[in-house]
Image (cartoon, rainbow, N blue to C red; front, side, top):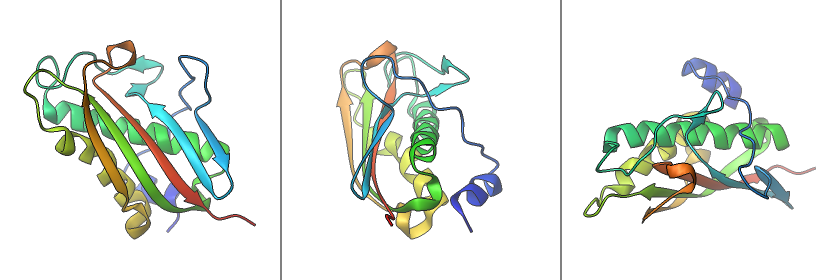
Length: 153
């Protein structure tokens, strides 16, 4: 089953690639790797939530938001090289704008990690960092970036 078929089976469609909010590109290929810039939980051109996880945003909401970030990661990869060329999700970094005392970053970032597993199966298992930060761009509660290996000719 292709990644697009798996997405359809999950009832998901890839969003439009989120335009950069500063001087960078959504994704870049170097050799057999695609490096995806940090993706915010944007859908339909709108940031889905703002604030700190553990205060204005619950951990459960943030987990869903990282899933949206992961969909945006997939859209960036698809627009650059095509999801069918992904061999392996290598590394995922999740940033969580955290209220003081919030320590559930790993659970929040699972929303993204689990989506990659659902779409790519074993090839979606990856190394990962889940980092609590004071602030994120646009007051977003979460941000996800990724590195994937792709098949080359």
